[in-house]
Length: 230
Image (cartoon, rainbow, N blue to C red; front, top):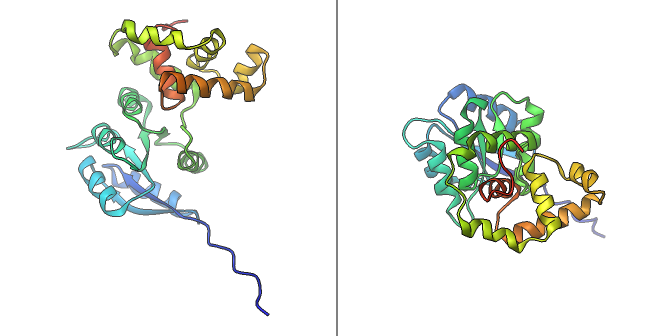
């Protein structure tokens, strides 16, 4: 009589670290490799090396610095996000490089990781991005947009016209998202359930053809629905 089949080993997510500072790469490697469900498969010191590493190693996630010699992280992110079935990109940034991180999000990056974040926060962020979530604190999203939306192109009539696809309640939800409120805070503000807010947000993304919450925030500002200082 045979016993039960052994449980399948848990999947291990593959991570590529791209940063021009060796100490940063070493620190991130130690944090990532300390976990049984994560493994660092390679390192890169610039964007060109990151592109080569992705092609050779097929990581699930790239921790991408933004300011590097040669091909910088923004350009590398743009190229990787244009690839079908490419890895998820987690931008490694410091607050004084917000403009680069904002541009990286527009290019398709999946979130931010602050370089001096504690190990526990790094791991939470890494796993969330691997699950398909977009990890940017609402307050940081608002700060990024408010600081750099003035450098974005003026909202075009066609872009403003896209708002007509939304119901009045959906516009309310989008405006509150753009102002940095979480789903729970929006639910409290509108006296609805958090699930209802998630449903509205999903419909907003679908109707506007937007990829995620961050791009919804950017659209809200660039379309003129919300203005800096509101």
